[in-house]
Image (cartoon, rainbow, N blue to C red; front, top):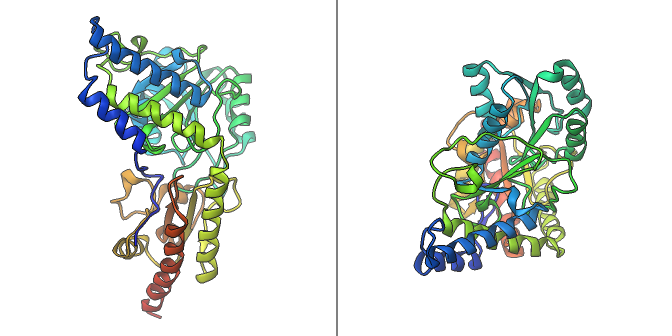
Length: 386
């Protein structure tokens, strides 16, 4: 038996996505920028995908830019917005951001002299809107950008996005959110929310890897960062990844259908059942961000004084896939910077693992995890020196 519980790292591509991509690779492989009929057939599929992605998040197709993934989308958003506002030199963000946001901000602070303001967070990983207001008041007209993620990839904690965006809009500051863990999992409507720029990746919502999207609201100025052609309305040069884009469009359509069902509620019931069984079976378990609003699919739990690496290796041997934090830093032996920034102690941070479900997670997988994880943790604890 196996249980794949690492869906915040990546999800299984939907069969419909694979079929659509295979068609583009074998039958409609022309360059969508070519003027001949073959190329224009590919262009039509790209534009259909743009419409499908736009519909998923409540945007206009003209506001969607396809990228190679969320990392490129995040870099384009941050650098492009700053380049459009060269006289403003302050960025407001948090220490909880994914490295694809955290590292560009750090680089711009170190190498380009930007003033990067890091907002504090509470133990559940939530910012205070009052702290954001104070930072905006302090730095005033010098603030070029506020970049705060929607949902944390490690804990599932959901930020007060509407209040954050409303405050930024009131102060006429651009608000960019990395919504990689939100899109396809919770309803998103950028037309109704005070979001100026939003990024996400296809492989987090049962689409392909290597493709993502950036929503750029009409009121936002953004300077292209990847030059080489007039693609994507001159906002991102380079021949489009047509199979990936078409696959993302299909994934967006499927995700929209999923969100119109009781699938998220069923998924949360599975997550809660798994979490409750582990807490009951291992009484010293710490559930990180337990008091925050959390994404229905994510549970981050610690078993101090155990080390997460030992737990994950034993889980893997039993066919259970889990993680200790962001997939791109999973080779690190250091405790999660996200948990440390929340004020979680090092012993807890070192012993934390993330279990994340998808809409394809089955009750059988949950049953197997419930039967296996507490027993394994108890065995590890019993082997620890007194």
